[in-house]
Amino acid sequence: MIWLVRNTGMKGQLSKLVLPIFIETALVMMLGAIDTIMLSQHSDNSVAAVGVVNQLVNLAVLVFQVISFGTTVLCSQYLGAGLKERMVQVTAVAIAFNACSGLLISAALYLGSPMLLSLMGLRPELMGEGMCYMRIVGAFAFFQAVSLAISASLRSADKAIYPMMVTVVVNLLNIMGNYILIFGKMGMPALGVEGAAISTSIARGVSMLILIVILFRIHIPHFPMRLFRPFPWGELKNLLKIGMPAAGEEISYSGSQVVITFFINMLGNEALATRTYCWNMIFFVYIFSIAMGQGGAILIGHLVGERKVHTAYLLGCYTRWLAIRVSVVLSFLLACGGRYGLEWLTDNPNIIRLGCLILWIDVLLEIGRAINIWATQALRATGDVNYQFYVGIIVQWTVSVGLSYLLGIHWGYGLLGMWVSFMLDENIRGLIFIFRWRSMKWATKSFVR
Image (cartoon, rainbow, N blue to C red; front, top):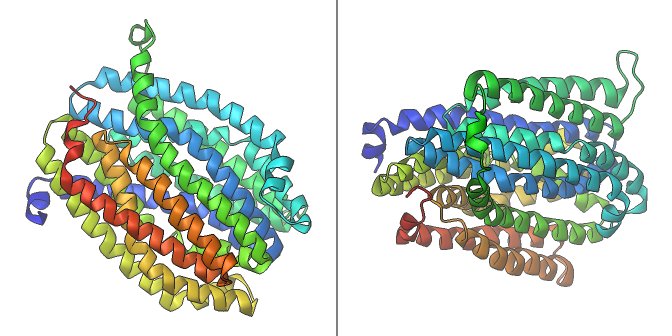
């Protein structure tokens, strides 16, 4: 298997995709982590409030990914089959759809922030900062909608380097903006949470504008009107056919996390802050799995478009093995050194003690997570888009949510009990997806005929 990857030039192609996606993903995650790190110097309550808001904002962003998921799959398969004009059609339809849906969702987040945060059970002492952050970040969420569609098309065409470069610029802007606006530097007032929200929104707006310029100068110089007369409703249908179950699985996961956040809120502010700190540290463990999953999926999509199904199967096995191996090593290193990271973020001994225990449980969790990240991307790239949706809904809500309540609330094991339920959820789904890949039932579901 490894011989095949190395001797068909795929290892070089995989590295060319995975490295920029890895850097881009790390920097995107840092965009949220930077807010948490800088706000931790402000107060633990600010961190807890922003952590709850981000659960809702991330759930909304997943709606934008309905089209972005489909864009990556269709563009990859069409480029593999040499159907460039259909790739152009898909890209245009994706950008237009995401722009419209993004504006609607931004308005909903801004206007509905009091009701949504009340439904989340956010404590009264956190409500002011939570609403402030959500209204600003939510109002400009459509920046991400457009950026996601453009980035998906660029990556599918082996141009992942450009979204990565944009993300580098955006992170630098966000760090500078946070420093100035949160703490009141360079003559600006100290705005705290409001400053973090303003800085993050400006950075995402700049990202969208740069990606639009790259789209027209590097990727697709123009969109010929003849390709849209009549309007390609078939491509929109295919985008939704792929994107809705794909995003549905992600929305199911994020929805389950929203419910779990509600449970954690019942445990108190310390539990909320601990979860937020741990999540922001753990993010950097599974970045490689995300990059490997996305890079491998693009190549698998090309191979499926070229009708090289057996090669696609072997490439999938190779990327899965590599993702598991790296994730386990990184999670073990994080567990060993996690105390130092937590002590840097907070001086609360209860948060530090609980966080250290959670990081050790997470070592086992990351085995299943690596498989799930790989499997959802790989199966989606082949056109097998419904299976992971059904598996996700059933297992996430019964094991992750159900056991979280039983272990964490009913039986009193708190946040540790909840993390055990997360670990079981990830590993059960991982085993199911391994058997699905081995069955080869995905081989007949390509969108290229």
